[in-house]
Length: 152
Image (cartoon, rainbow, N blue to C red; front, side):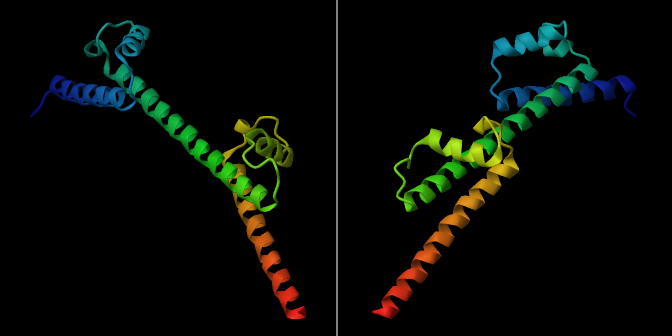
């Protein structure tokens, strides 16, 4: 039967492995790693307690989630730009490709001063609004063409 010390060492070994894996996955360089360890008053990760390792791991995992969240927001911003450009192109607007113009439209519509502060759900709504508006405009144009051809 394993003793308490053996179990603690086992747990610490697993936590150290997870700690180093997270550092590598997030691309933390040696200088940043040393600064992190200095914050805990140690020079080596082996000197950390189990509680300190758990604390660092939670912070590292949280940082990764925050980065993923930023990436998701960037993807939605790019989708909004693409949909807005397509919509402006359909209108023959001379501002197609003008990022500041698209940002101003979106911010004015939602009441924000900074495009990057628009939350994910509202970016999704903007995207869907531009797509729906474009589809509606194309459908109206198609109906108008049908009516014109019927009258001739």
